[in-house]
Image (cartoon, rainbow, N blue to C red):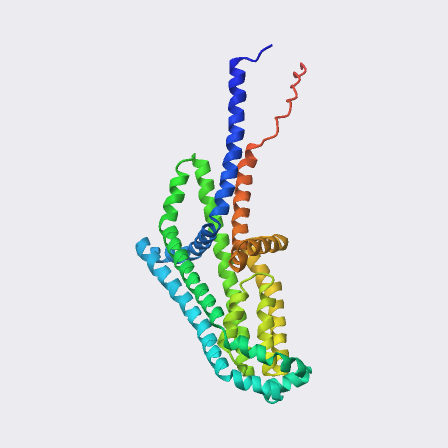
Length: 364
């Protein structure tokens, strides 16, 4: 028996829906791949806006207009970041200039076996290797025009990206609440409340994790800085900022921050290196077993496996910045998934059980 026209229309409609969904998915994937850099900047801007939003709300409670509060908070954030960059690059610049002036003397000490470097070379028994490589090392270090230009381009590109992220964060802070309310108003009351609740929980999780991670990183930098200052190790400010910056990376940040710091302390004195390594190990135990679990339990509530996976995936997709935002993004995904599950779960009810008919009462 031939299909009816209505059945053919239903079949055709289903085919069009399936094909349209497949085409839309392919286009979405292509768009995400094409806008990879923009999406990364947008995610960083959104996380920055979430972290700064509590300060904006605090100024709002002081009867300051939101637009003015956003400008004040963003300018404050940019000033703090600029100060940190200045404190980080100034010692590097001074060390580079000093190293360039002392390079011939250092090479001569290495060849003659004199000075601290010469004694280190004798201790390691690498005199022949240094003699063979001295000319190449000198040539490579004195002819650095190409690396300098490359570093300059990287710095300029980083400044441009920083300005883009700051502008996006400003507009997210300004327009974000209105966009959330506008989207919520398109849905029924229950769904609108679920959307607002999801946004609030996501903001709380991300802001709590980022602020907690910043706190542990600052503590790490202060502990290492005080240790290096007491030991008399050079470049205290530079190494402290390095430790605080790299310690932002969960799980592996302590190791990456500790290796070069301990190496510099070891060059200053073997005893100083051992003391610095001991301080690093002790603080990492406190951070990994006390501070970080406390932060994770109160904010993102992610298992260690998912934390590691989010960091690895973020680093693979976007390098250092991707590793930094991997956990906040995973926290948002978890909040959304739990809210969706909680929203639809009550609607999935078991079929009512068959009622047992009541028997008539026996006559008295």
